Image (cartoon, rainbow, N blue to C red):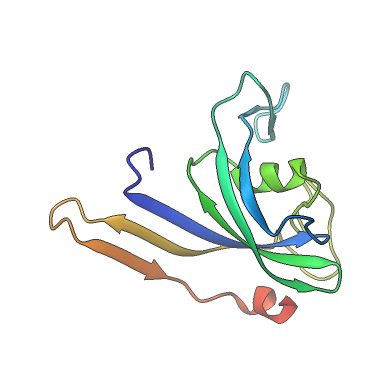
Length: 135
């Protein structure tokens, strides 16, 4: 990811309607004190950059395409909660949801340069039924 030869793209279903339909979240992430799982925004944390674009709104929810420039643990979940749009069903950084029994996040595409052939490869993954039903 540091050399920009590997790109991961996600779809997230976030709480609320975004004021700005696209942007970049550049907020460092660190392990939350006294937790082995949870992360938080911390000025002393590692650089974390998420690019986002709202692709659709449904009721009071937004379908958001997220592309990672860095790959921190829980990066999208932490960044979306940080801007007050936590993922639906994310009980660690938001709240549970009657609409979905898990966090509404799906890695739908990876793109990278093959290390030997140097060809650009792209792999797409179908959206799971529970996520698709919501959007």
